[in-house]
Amino acid sequence: MSGHSKWATTKHKKALIDGRRAKLFAKLIKNIEVAARLGGPDLDGNPTLYDAVQKGRKSSLPNDNIERAIKRGSGVGADAVEYTTIMYEGYGPNGVAVLIECLTDNKNRAAAEVRVGVTRNGGTMADPGSVSYQFSRKGVIVVAKNEATTEDSIFEAVLEVGVDDIEDRGDQFVITTDPSSMVEVRTALQTAGFDYESADVEFVSSMPIQVDVDTARKVIDLIDALEDLDDVQNVYSNFDMTAEVAAQLEQE
Image (cartoon, rainbow, N blue to C red; front, side, top):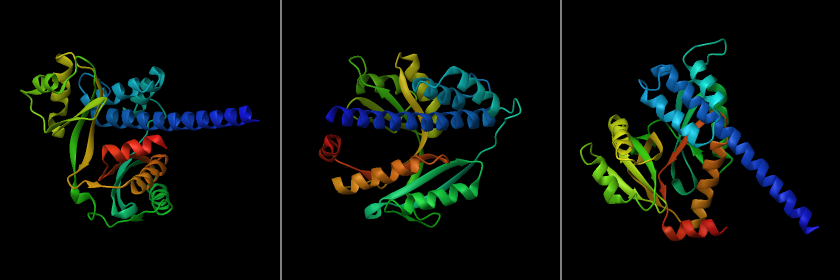
């Protein structure tokens, strides 16, 4: 019986992972479509599209999907798409700030689903401006750590370009820069032989708050629920946690 139970659990986990992968692919495809619509289909002349495609490839998004997304985004073919970006603001458990970025073809559906997602998971919606003031747009580049990749070697590679911060997160380095410098920093890293995992413009909070295990668990559940929504592209928050809290969560 336990074998059957284990199989059922494994099957459930696989279904969950497959479902997550399908949603991840959908978000990656949207990113590519929007980048192609805004800057054209040429990868060399459109760095935003280049980064969106690279992110897709690193997440195993099939090449056919990438090519179709570029065509749809640039208006080629009958199924060309038009998305609108909308930002929603809210508070999670214990007053943690949450910024929700939607990319949608239906504003009413997006608003309704986000509201339900927030309130069902212990959060409340906030007035425009009440949360967003503490977030600013930053270029965020992630580089995997290995023997050849050290903080000093990264610093040397980007010295002439300049960055805001290089943070060691255990198995990777996170480089924060001005959004207008992100392509230049990414190019400098590539020229120096570093392979980057992702390069995105994100909203980073200037007022992070440390949370305990219980709050961290609840906030992560809220973010997971929101990221599961088709119209939600990204969720940003100001919660931070110590290495001890992170270790406790990993053990669960």
